[in-house]
Image (cartoon, rainbow, N blue to C red):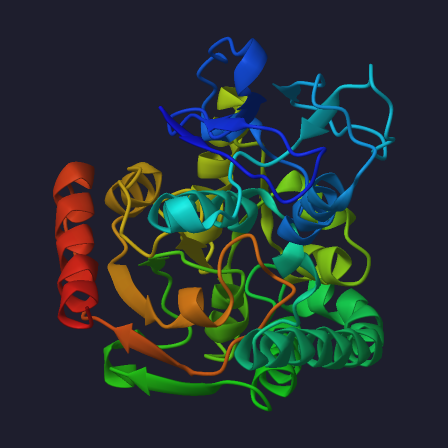
Length: 367
């Protein structure tokens, strides 16, 4: 403890400064204050504390019998009354005798303001994030306009599709290819590698791929192949998009319902036996961090029981352009689709392990 005295006026008072607590008290009636950590001093800016201190030091009516107390709450405006307690929201004071200690206290409190304050809430978004939001809005607008127009063509063609091509529905998939191309081409460049590995259009197969983004569906539809996706039942309730998926023959699935899962697999096997192809995302959901998750064996059981090949595909870049859970933004970039050679076999587990290692190898090479 150190004592600093002032004799510039008859109303001057001796103040005791405690380095640990950061407060002043009248030395004539001194009792050590409690040690209070810096974390209780929140809620006021430094300018307000300086204003209060200037009032205290310049006042000639301030009584030397008043004491200083710590408080977590802000005090009302200072009034020069002998019995009134003066409260401070800051544990540091500018004094020439303790300039070095003052610097550390000032830094500590300012760092708390930076952590708990809301000064950054009004800052504008970075340029790349703002552009991504604008691109996302434009993407949604283009997708909606194209869907409304092309959905009418699907409705007109649907009766003929049910009569002539009930299972593959090539006409509906051709319209879906136009829609996905119009939606994605202005914003994202797609590169396809390994087109020669695709089976003939009329050959049934089980297609599998990693799943990173909602953009995966758009990318795969641009290939123009008549495979049936598997989607959760709530998607079919979406206007236009959900209805179009129904016309395409998308297979509904309730994820947490084991009975629905069995019915889904039976329907997939029936479609494959009748010449159609099905598409699975074996991870079951989109990857949040881009890493390949565990594969479920349902798709490979269908391939093993029906004797059709498994065609693995690797999608690269969709997760960065439209991250999972952030469908309202669209970052710039390109998407790469790698089509691998078909895998054949009668054991579901062997097919699963081979397909997963094939996809993982390409993802690891891409970093």
